[in-house]
Amino acid sequence: MPKDTPQREKTVRERGTFAKHGGDPSLKSYLSSLFFVLSVPGLILVAYAGFTAGFYSYSFVVPVFAGLFVASLVVVFTAMHVFT
Image (cartoon, rainbow, N blue to C red; front, side, top):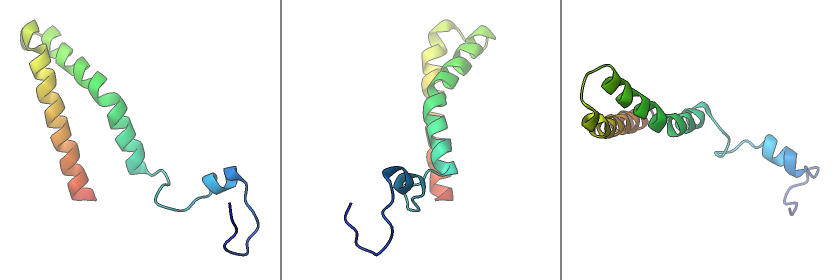
């Protein structure tokens, strides 16, 4: 990495660990990743739990999942629009 300013040369680890720029992970990025990883399995579980509880028949599990998925996306995009 070329030296543009007179500073000591940092190792690759130091440059990544102590970077103070827009690429730093934040609480919002961690929550986004958590939603990405857990939303589909969680919604499948909720949809199947509704069938198990007797709220609807087995043929409605997929449409209920689809509705929950769309509703969760609307909630997340609305929250992103309001808070950012």
